[in-house]
Length: 242
Image 1 (cartoon, one colour):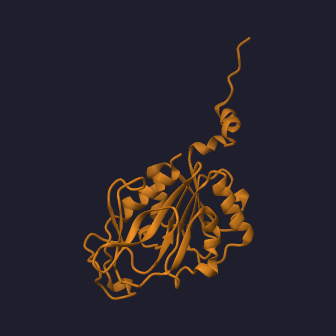
Image 2 (cartoon, rainbow, N blue to C red; image 1 turned 180 degrees about the horizontal axis):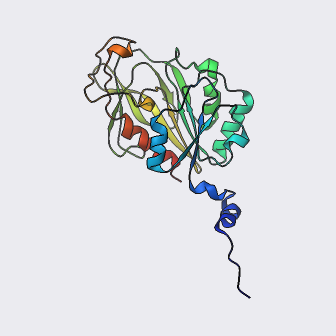
Image 3 (cartoon, rainbow, N blue to C red; image 1 turned 120 degrees about the vertical axis):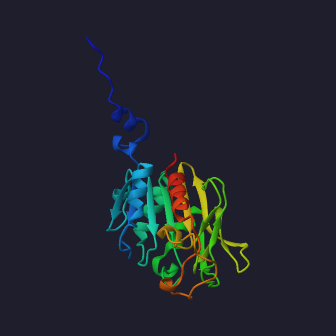
């Protein structure tokens, strides 16, 4: 009698508790806390890196996050309920990766969202707003996240504490100041917290000049920071690496 072969999907389930579909990483993109849409470049990036984007317009629960590889919380403006905070923390502690992108207080309030309650147990904390320097820019240094130094936009944000910094706001003289992006590996989970949102919106142009333009007027500013696309691609690639 011929011996039956055990299906690969069953072996995966036994070994890792994962469905066979996990071969294609799932990225859950939070749209339930004031965000309006998924950035158009993210699905394109998914096609390039091989992940599937799943918008999440409702509350974040263990069921919504089950089997996901990465959760993206970009620029929330509404509060995360206590059970959502617990679900997110449990997701990371269970091996899921997390990307948190905030901005200055007038756009993404720390108190209104409660985001520090989410990232605090994971070893991070976002500060109050840093001094506003219009179109000051930021620099990510080559290392575990980015393959080369990356120039990215920054124009009104805050700082992040905890983890290992890999990108810094630039000061008036173009020198690195406080960290605006930091990472940590927690077991099999990977976490990145960013304290300004322009790079994640793929802003910045090669012709941008630091400290130029009209303060708080994006229509009359060409933002410095030509590397938002590779910077963001490398972030997603690192977060999805296991």
